[in-house]
Image 1 (cartoon, one colour):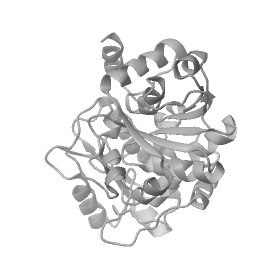
Image 2: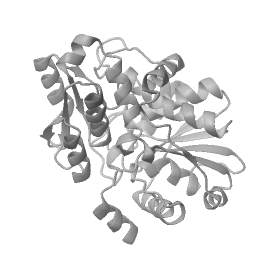
Image 3: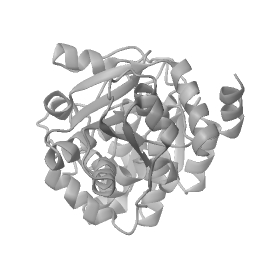
Image 4: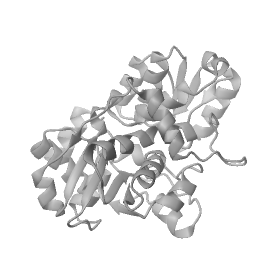
Length: 330
């Protein structure tokens, strides 16, 4: 399961729940088993019993470490020696950089020039080489493909990769183990790695559990893709949810989402800010805008869940303090 391509033009290896279990074994003792948090205020607001999987407290501050470490650990020795290449706006970049450093593998990360300064600094701090590009005029996939080809390195995309998907699914696996049976699982959706892996885990462990993805209002390519039955491409969206500014979901992810996800909804930037404020004021935790996607949908009532046991993945907490202050004061 080491195909690092985008999946177009070749047969796809679609991961299964067995791959999630394999990933769990690879990352055990390396990735944090993050806590499951509860809030009576959240329960009252949602009219449900809500369990938050705090991937804000994962290594590098986001769930991305799971998939990154799993994908690198799965590589054959020769490719590990040649290094890995990834492209990301921030969280996957940091995750690959740290996972590669921990496993003694050279890493090159292609990042947009407008990526949050904190994420750029952290990625460099983990020892990765950074190549900057303009997300509005340049193709990050093409840049990454060229670098990987020139160096004989393995390309590990942020979401369109079977080992990445399987690794991300371990977060939902842990949530279900710790919270107990759920009626509903709600997950942020950018490229679909986290949602795809989460759906694999949820439907295997709890066949009756409804699985929902949540996108930023300005970037509903996943919602459109499910409605049309094919991967839909959109222009680069504009939203404060910088980790979900994808133009299309992954080709490895789409079959999973099509077969196992019950629905996809969207939330506005204003709802994300309100949810960030809730976490800061009431639960005393920092959640980045992208990390608030699923929670915003549940707490605002965008997904009806009254009387249900609901699991929510808080996917990350990497927001710089200046931006956080601006969001919360606005």
